[in-house]
Length: 143
Length: 147
Image (cartoon, rainbow over all chains, first blue to last red; front, side, top):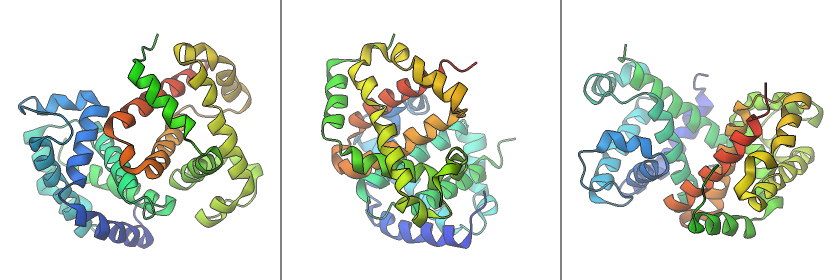
């Protein structure tokens, strides 16, 4: 299920719009994930407030969105381009890779609420494939 | 048994009472067939499914999408007994339709995205959590009679 040129174009076009809302999209996605999938809270027990919209959630969400933006820029070589981020997730954060899919779904729901006209079925499939490829790239160094 | 708070019941009821089945049903099924193309295996009698454009204008897909969405009505009316309510449909999907139960989650994810698109900011994290809990219970019930 590798990304076709059409997929890459669709992802870039969508991200051009989404990344403009950099201050909110990431935080929204992270907040939703923590609420809808409470098991993910286990990775953030050191935060004082895990509620949607809280400061640590919004700040961290923006950071994560930056990571996805970086992935979009490296869309032609995700496994190579995400090596550093993969090392971070593998050796330091040790996030179970099943959670990448969970965050991906949360992000897509946010995008659907904010950009319903842009998130067509064709864009959705391209973006879903892209996020799966990002997850694979992030898992590269795990074992 | 699954527990539903008053708040959850009211959220679910609101979503469905404001739902345009004739719009959301087709959109959800179309999205499923486009985003997860292997699901097309169950619809070889539906004619042209060659690309997203064909799928989104296929009248059989639209009609079936509406039918499937109405299938959720029985869960809505029997929130406290979803498992038993779907026993018959579960047998149907297993023995007659031979649908891989993993597909139920795929369709429910697409339905979530369509509803999110329609409700926009009204699809709050809380509403999302409740709706996904509802769909997860239905999905589980539909898979229960497989053996």
